Length: 560
Image 1 (cartoon, rainbow, N blue to C red):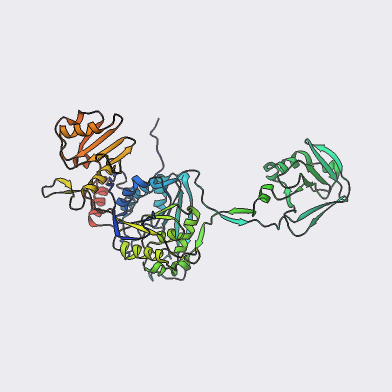
Image 2 (cartoon, rainbow, N blue to C red; image 1 turned 30 degrees about the vertical axis):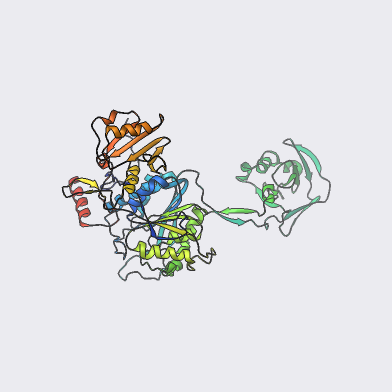
């Protein structure tokens, strides 16, 4: 057998793994705003590091993710450098997308806003990460009018952008618009004038009326009216009425004549215990009709409704042109109107769901999620997290009246908690040795960080000091800056129950302690975590620099 291959997009550096350090997040009470009990989170820092920090707590909890990453257009944005070589751009997107997928609920949705600069490559990458079977649709968004000139020297006008929509897994259902079903088609009424002839067809009682023994009257539709349906084509195989006509009424005109009416009992799902059928009206005709009432299930509903498919094209040119001052912050070249996010969140989330945007920009996604009573997580790097996101979201809580506020009757309220992505836990000393960064990390923060690196949930026990965190029931972690001696580990073990296990992380310990107890493991820090992650990396942001360009060029030359 040959090697099994799969369809995928390849590029320089794709297989180079990024070992992102799963840092803790540092709470900033001064920058938090409003009701601190709300579960909304605003994070300042590199979005890849921030996503990794969220991974443990929020895996499988987010209902809707909307991101609007830099488009790699080659143009310089005020707040981003948006000019990356294709391979670099894809290398930076891939680990972010992988974490984002893991954060989604099983019934969650991922929406990525992009233009055609990288859109085709991104689509293939998303197919690989989410699975092509989980691709749902591409929403085409008109972002500017044809007559709006971007640059005089442009040969092609950038008028349309795309939003790729994926589900996490099969079974995820978007919220569809609902429309009341009119009664105008149920406008036919049968009047029996004479007595029909009773026969048995297909095991059912049937009354046959000649053309002068009945009338079919058309007037205003009502819940008592009937809808006229041709008994032909796929209808003949698609439901019980069609099959009955096919099997028992086709050709009956040769025996009963033309223009007869058949009243068939015990068939259909409407309010009547019978259904009317007509044969062909004149010589040479072969088709007939049947008359169906409103289904009983629909009659039992308060309103008879039907769902409407989500459109594939939306004209938001006017909203893009007028959103500059929404939220009281201006964000050139990239700000999205609140109306666009209202549409996205309406279809792909519900009240109380968690919405995440890891390229928050000016804060539109979080602002709209807040106004629509969703919980939200927003991540933004750089100064605009303070100047734009924090400012805008605080105004939303105070009762911002711009954007969608009127349409959703927004009056203010709620709050958010602000977090900073801290520097790496480890740094190099003047001799080039890795040491814990105690200038930033307190003893508590060190314990929380080490617990996270080992997959434990940091949750100190109020009574037992060495139970700082747990991975599962009765499995604990303890981090200390003291050297572990025989006496110390014996003391810990004496306090442990027989079904408990413990991981101790410390800077040093006496030789031979590793095997002293079966239910106690001991590791040195930072040595035990150095090989797991890339420490000392303070930014994975999507900017290009000369070093990255040189690395890509070197790789290409080596392959050639």
